Image 1 (cartoon, rainbow, N blue to C red):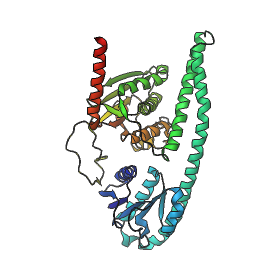
Image 2: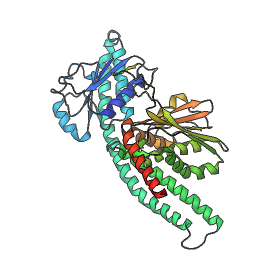
Image 3: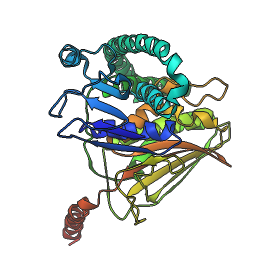
Image 4: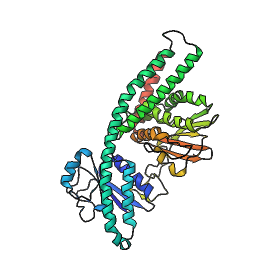
Length: 412
């Protein structure tokens, strides 16, 4: 099946590629760009406003067209596309809604038309009702998200104050405290900080889909991020007597990332690991340079890409593995635990409401990295990769030389 994406949005292109790899067992060719004329394809995804010379004609076969539209642009879109059967997804597009539409498109393409002629008319009528209902639900969802973002923003202020006051009391400027009082204050301070992180995660998750944000990349040491994350979750690990081991190798080329954001990713994953590791269990953290073939997301799936795969296996990312001795994750939920507010039933639910892992995936997506989970013989393993930017290496070397010269001058 040939899927045409008429858009310059790299995030939308990556999302389409991932969804097609998940839902299609047969080879699918995904091509994107801005054509001069209306493209030919089994399924066409249009990013409004149209950047082609002519608007698409969907009258003959509306089921093969999907339109991605900003909510504020809906009136202008209706003026150009008057067909009531138009399939519309509101920006920002979520993985769940895109998967539903592409799954139906793939099913339409694969089914035998001769065998379904009698059922098609009734099905299309029902489908049209669902399309209109889905659009209304997307509008309600955006209203709910906006309300939630505003509420959480107001919720963070008193939490910040509570965290600050408890930390101030622990420093004992108002007088000495007994050991019992210090322990209670430490636990209260830790719980307030954890609740503040959850509120911040909810706010980022609500706003992040609507605001395009590029991370402030700068050379950083991943070991410092790991140490800070361990400092944050250590009280939780100590309560359960969990042993934490680290094995972090340095990359020859410096990593470029936003330290606060990557610390948040590590805290979220480690917090999840501590939650589901049994008492006196083990958590292992390993970091090392790694080769990641970005264009072969799932080799066992039938997704054909426009460009050839790399022949070099030189590390192009830095990978961090966090493995715990907790119960395995059901295979059919290894992907869904990273969805927003998604969980699976059972006593060993790993998603925690979808907040921590969903925000981790959003941050790594902004860094052009990836996060995933898999089961091993020793327990679940959560891994993520950060890209290595080779072009920044000379700048880093110059920076390192300047630092060495400064050290030598001080020693002299």
